[in-house]
Image (cartoon, rainbow, N blue to C red):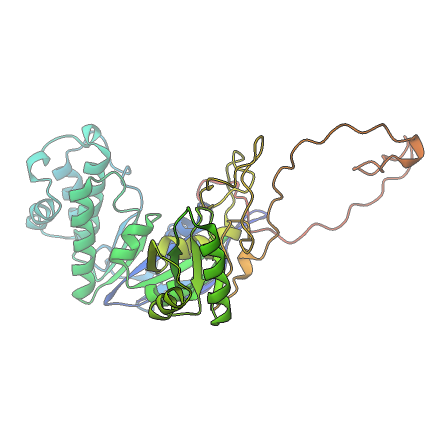
Length: 409
């Protein structure tokens, strides 16, 4: 088992990880999620003794990594698949690791077979593709037959067959009672592989729960209802009837209705009683990706400036487009990512931030105002030369946003 207590790491004035507390238990695949720059790699490096915590501790089986006897036989890790001497063959790279840890030579052939690199075992690793390098890194992690395994983006560069193999491998390792800790940005793979999730943002713990609980806590199921596009009056009639029946209705950008608070059979009965035809009536359960985006939307450091409301935004719908500007958000949708707030959804403190205002359409120029009506300058006036300097306001504590070293990721 891996256990972190008050784990903190600072690089000068920058804080990469702040007061992390979690446990990674054996017998399950635990996913480690978070945006770029959230501190995942720094946390994994501290687990492996590559970085020293500024405060707190992290242990494996109750002991720090550096105090484990013959750690290579107890802990296997894939942190950087490129950390291989390019002049060595796959076989000799693994053999050197085995000899350092006192592992029999026969084990090298075994793990080469497990990862499917027997055919290229004598080739120098500098000619390996990204996917082959990943397989070699996984082989190195498995070399000592350890009980604790850490993988950082293990499917990076693998083809679909390789991704399926890694998925089944991690499940099998966990089924054998091992501790499997996997960091990844591929939500689809985590949904298929992980049993438990640890999510961090800006170096702080956001969630520590099962995949099912995580999705339920950060989303709400709803029914998607669509009426004929040629009968807008029927859509309005059905909306009023559903609200009267106790449902909550939100218009979606593509013209459908998002209904919560009513079961599908009840929605069907209401439509039948109001004599409204339905083109669609389907249930919707949030995916892990959608739940993750809701949870972490306020903890993302790097956003594109192309979209003024950057985030996981619903597509624009016909009829909503405004010439010369973006499509407005339908009534009931809000938040920086354009998500509707649904009944039953738990509030997320990282998502409680003001959305960026959408650009306004250009207005006709107005006559200039007289000088006495001009607005005050946006920046405070500078003191005249020779005047005593006014002390600046005290800076905030070391922030948890930007990092100035590559290790603080």
